[in-house]
Amino acid sequence: MAVTAKSFQLWRARVAPEDTVADLCRKAGIKRSTLGQQLVRGKVAIGTVVSSARAYGLNPAQELGNFDGYRDLPTGIREPTDAELVSQVSHIDILRLLVARSQDEEEAGREVRFELAPFPHRNSVRAWIDAVDRGELRQGLAARAGMLRRIYRRSSLLAG
Image (cartoon, rainbow, N blue to C red; front, side, top):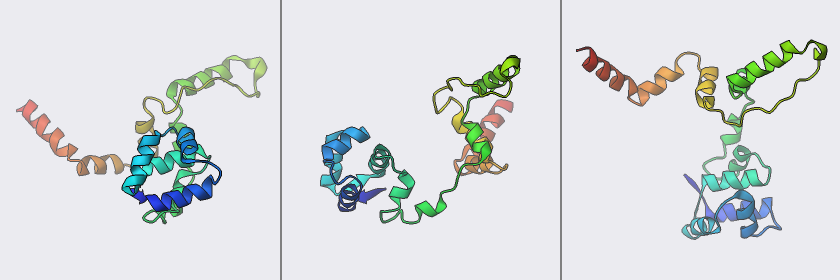
């Protein structure tokens, strides 16, 4: 989906009235030609809105709520659960923290600091799905994607 160029320009003027389109592109990491083409066509990509909002330190979901077709988006926002937050830390980093806390008896009770692996980590999507899945999410996604039929057919061919 996209937003209209006119609504994007109005939003941009409200968010960064002093900045030019070139300033916006530089801050958001968008090519000027890309945004120019979108404006000429009359439709600005959602990715452009999200990148622009982030460039100005704004919540992308909240800002998308300013555009037709996305007005109800901010109402669905909720804080991540503890399980979701922990899912975004790699297992190696969690183990490093546990070892660091258990080995240094003199520093017990003090804050342990070290660099976390860059986000997202290699298994972050799988870990997040595990954190939010009550048991039916993975099966439902696989069924909707037709994966169960393919897996069943492949296993039947191998067994037969």
